[in-house]
Length: 464
Image (cartoon, rainbow, N blue to C red; front, side, top):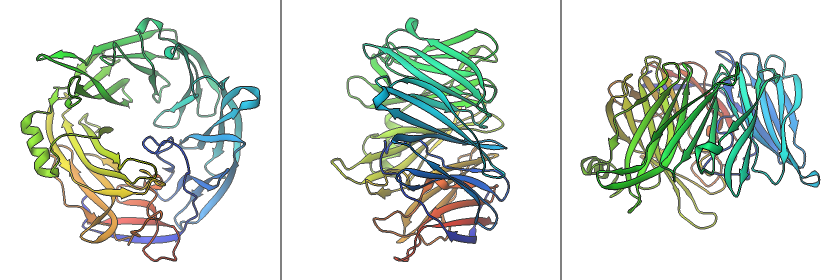
């Protein structure tokens, strides 16, 4: 997609109450909108302190249906997903008087909005770690899980696997006692229902990934040392990011840092290929003085700071792109949030590095919004990556698009969409509701620059 101009086809008033709590660095539900047809999409919208709504919008940008969801007491939304026929909302409820916590699933028909089912998925003592859930990319499978600890160390995980109708497929127990000391694990589930449990052990040096299927009790384990002493420098794992591919493989991107100085040392990537039964390693990308000189030239920053792994994108041909983002706050209570440059690292289908680049941006948001309106949205079509950001460039605040070729790294200058977005301390853009209806059409929620105007839901079509 090479947009040279954008035309806003339609716009309508939109009601939304911003989230008032939670981890602003790690949104519990970063995506609250899903495409269900070339013209329609479903969203999860907060209407008041204890009321949400699952809604479907059509070509006219009017709600075809809106189903309210009331929350009870200490209940919060935990996950939102969608498949071809249903939308799924999962909530986390604490009943302090009973000393329990539980995950509840609510299923909605995407054609009518009718609530089809509500059921308790998993329960545990409230004093335990917070229950968690992972959903598959196509919304057809989910796994709920309870981390069981001893002296703050993770010993095992009790899990339950469900299909899209919230029918239980299997109860599972992931015994991690033999993996060595660890404090946490990440769980993913693919479209087939296989579960992948990733744990860091050996003082953040070793990454262990275990795959569990639903047919039998077979457990396949792959491990790799990512920290240790290299060229007389001791390094440890600082950050990890995982991406499931539907060919029964898990991609892991890892930032490692020097133990002595805390400086970023390198980027590593491993593909845990369970179909082939082996690990595939990308060439390590060292943050050498030459690389840092290029970064400094682009950003004026003398060293890498506040860099986080944010995404792994994989094309149909197997090309891979790892994205990191610089994010931080000014420090102190109610301080502003910043989202700055992206570092892009590309690999071919054999995990050989092909190119890397810096995408400059400079975004600012008040503490009340966190990263809900800044950062970026990424969409990959074929070998063309589209990035959407809210920025103020040359005095114009707008949504901007950047088109980047996955094979060569060639990119176009950012181009304004033309939404005339407000530039003040109020909500200007709600990134969670951004959807790509097709290769050329997106929907977005923003507030125009007119002081009296509320939020607007817009459909935007890019033209060549």
